Image 1 (tube, rainbow over the protein chains, first blue to last red):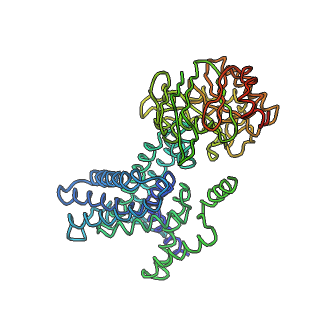
Image 2 (image 1 turned 90 degrees about the horizontal axis):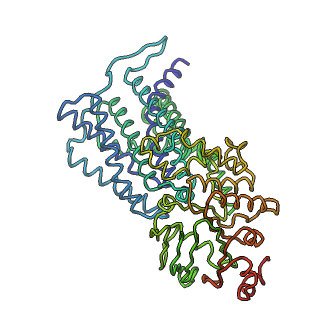
Image 3 (image 1 turned 60 degrees about the horizontal axis):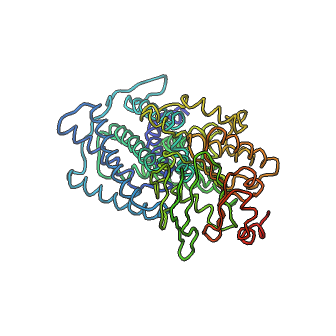
Length: 299
Length: 248
């Protein structure tokens, strides 16, 4: 039991970073109804911007975090212009395929600029451990959890408490009605994309700081984790992304402990399979899916 | 105030709107009627920038707004309602109004004040609109839970939230009973007293005849008559094209 609780604790810390990735995915999917497969690679490019600053100038943690976020936002904006803004709204598959092509482009570009594959990344409070009772948590995990929690709360406040968030939700639900209500849907979409990339950049920084290293394969990893966490929670659902991220983290930590490292990803895919079989809309996306079906059948 | 000059929209070989010219004057209620498929809704969509025009021009207060994107049309001072209601069902009644508060005054508050604001600045306006629409007790309800008539009223209130100078109503009486139609007529007259200009696209003849100052009749995308309600009622071309066959 104590092992299980300890695993959950570790899982929640990792899951908080997954939740950030899933939030970025769900924000983009929500406003665009299209998948951005290049989301992970844009984050990876941001992390490499951070590591360049670290190695080249021995910059501090805050500067590296800012460089990572800015790098992810810049690459994210490039993807938005190329794969989504420039491609017609009803060509969802064309957007998805082109985002995959851009993925390859980003990975190649990063590999050319950083030929050594694996690079060092500074850790947050590396090696320190916080103990409470029988449980303990790496200080870096605690920092990850705290920063991710602040970012999630900030995003929730932005989406549910401000006029911008209201516009994002309006565009998600009905872009045509939003346009006619006077919302500049192109601008709102672009800014939502930028917010998603910023969240992704933050997640990338936290994860790379936890691992204290980075490779170009991080892009693939981040897209997978974010996608799975989002689909567990429900595509386009903001609370679902948080839930999906935490659930994925907890399940993975337990799989790692009880079944071993080689089954960890397998268990994650199985979990996704089971959830989608019984709740095709994801854990929190079911209501939205049903509402959309009802709306379609009415027309 | 609103001028259409030789406006045309062809979908493939179909001339949905064909060389249509008309002028809506400031402060008047202008009716646009015609049989199904005569191009009324297409005209509204062209003015609002829903799809591009084939040829012709749309002028609003002398400013060329032909093919302007929808949010610019709203910024210029034109808002609309839809024939089939398009509210944000997952937002509350009051949020539906808040999201549409895109008037020039709101825009002038700058990026941070407007986009990161919590909506307090528009609260007074929204409350007034809710009262106008008879929805003040439904403010916190999700729009999807409203009754049909309430949704129609909310959509009209949302169109007013951007403080337009010209309001386009696309078949606002569709699906309403006689009681609701008469309340709608009262609301339209009240808006005129506030100085609103209205372009009313409608099938329900008693509403059009009862509230409009002037009427244009479309058939196959072309204007076949224009004049005061009494003249339109007597026009032989209109009687054959429309009144003789439709629900009046």
